[in-house]
Structures are given as structure tokens and as C-alpha cells.
Image (cartoon, rainbow, N blue to C red; front, side):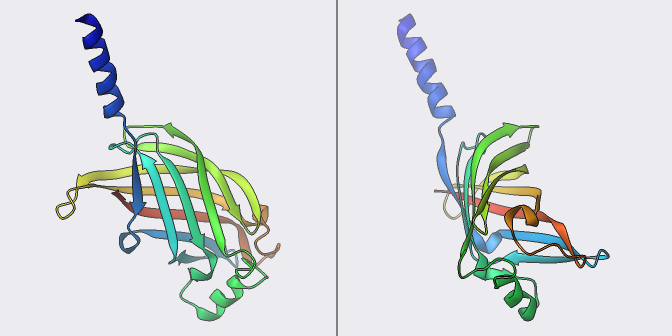
Length: 186
């Protein structure tokens, strides 16, 4: 009898922490960035073509993320600037069509916050980065009856570390990242 109770307790623990697949809902998600221009203003932009998946528990704990962003989808609300950013001067989108991120670590920092470490590959260069994460909420979707999670990831990278653009007084080196996600459990 005692062995049966222990076995049930172990199985319950396994099911309670079971991981499932999650996928970003692009219609309700945004991969954005901001960079200083002329040391006086900030220019914002986003990438419209991306795929973000995660493996996480129902409470979005201990999550593992995989991100694929298409560099040709950059949008700063200025076509001429976007074309220049796609060129060999910056992203070289023809040669490097994707920016990728693969998480390597997850650390819970609060009730709804976490740190996510991983490898970012951009412009052919891979470097470790850390993102701050927040779980905005988790609900059961009325239509699908599956869980949906709202998350926000933020961080800062140095574009020169990845060989994106050169040193210039007109453009800041630090790029602030803001990724707002609505993830659907699969």
C-alpha cells in the first residue's frame, strides 16, 4: 500500500510539471526594437515575419524558446531606410536571411518574472544574451479550450558585437529589444 501511494505521488508530480509545446500568435505578437539616432532621438522598428516556439509547463515555468526572425521583414516605417538596413551595410539579408535565438537557461526571478539566457545568431555571429521575461497572464481560450499565455521579453544588445553596421556617430550601438508575445498551447 505504501509503495502504491509513493508511486501515485511521483506520477502526479510528473503530470503537474509536464511540458507542452507553445507557438506564437503572430497577429497578437510583435518583435520590436529601438535604437538611438543622432544621439537625440530614438527610432523604432519591428520584424513582421517571425516564428517563436516554446516548450513550457501550463504556468509557463522553466520555458525553452526557439526564435526565427526573417531579416527581410524589417519595418521602420521608412522604405528607403528599410532597404538600406537589408543591404550589406547592415543585415545583409540576402546572405543572412534569419536572426535566430535558442534559449540555454531559464531562471525564475519572481512570481511572474524570469531571466532567459540563450544564443543569438545574427549576421553570421553567435553570442550569448540574457533577456528579462514577464508572464502577463495565462487563460483558457474560449474557442480552442487550450491555454494562451501573454509574455514580454526585453533586453539590450550591441549591434557591433554582431557586425551589423559600422561605428558611426549618427547611430547608437545599443539596440533595445521588446518582444510582446501571445503564445498558444499546441
